[in-house]
Image 1 (tube, rainbow, N blue to C red):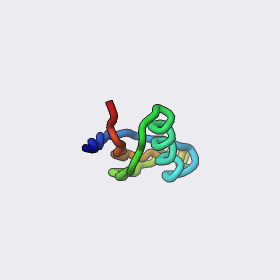
Image 2 (cartoon, rainbow, N blue to C red):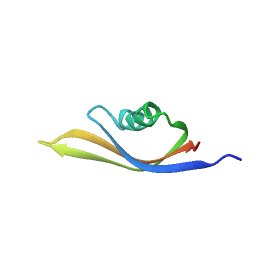
Image 3 (cartoon, rainbow, N blue to C red):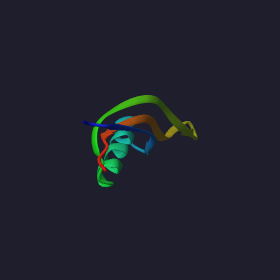
Image 4 (cartoon, rainbow, N blue to C red):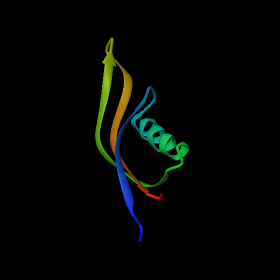
Amino acid sequence: MTIVKIRELIGTSAKSFEDALQNIVAHEAAAGKNVTGVHVLNQTAEVKDGKIAEFKVNAKVAYKWEK
């Protein structure tokens, strides 16, 4: 029997939304999680002095849960 656990995380990047999402996946992979998929819930950006300063991605990350 396979159990899939879901975590909701927010990733950030100064480069792009894609990079922010990759930061989430890399963080979970580095923690030993076997990531099987992601679902992007929301994307936002912080603006400073008329320019995008930070990209933010809110996503649910699925991975196989193993004891």
